[in-house]
Image 1 (cartoon, one colour):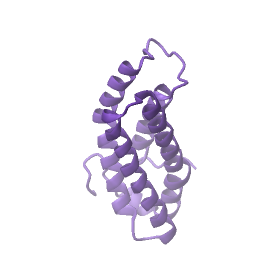
Image 2 (image 1 turned 180 degrees about the vertical axis):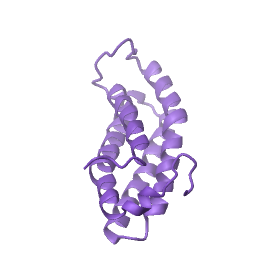
Image 3 (image 1 turned 90 degrees about the horizontal axis):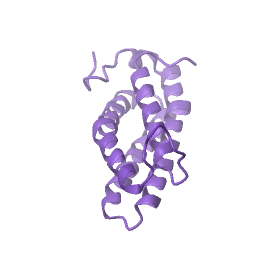
Image 4 (image 1 turned 45 degrees about the vertical axis):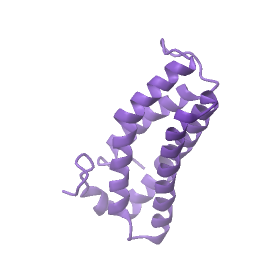
Amino acid sequence: MQRHPKLIPLSHEHKTLLFVCRYLKKDAAPYEGFPLDAASKMKYMVKVFQETMVPHIQKEDHLFEQCRGFVPELDVMIDELAEDHRIISGMYSALVDSSDVVEGMDQLARALEAHIRKEERLVFEKMQELLPDVIANLRLDEGKEE
């Protein structure tokens, strides 16, 4: 199913975040001058989380609020994604005090990647299928409905 135009900006952000996931993994391959040392990866991760991830989670949380309460099956999925947000945010916060930053970034990358795949392949598809009118009336850029 083609992505609904209102969800396309979130999908574009997911592509950016999937690159970050590949980069943060322990087995990351060199990519166009991105340094692979732990300090450089950590610095990049902090920048991306502050500039992209935090606003992205806020937009998704708004999306979830607007889609909750219509379809019980979808509510269960939304609850799982909201819990993923909490866990991933906690993993990010825990990196500050981590004794093994490389392992922590790898675990965070894998959790975030699985979360994004679940959103894209399962939840967004279900939302579009079951709640097209709700999706059509969203304004995710401002965090409120049109």
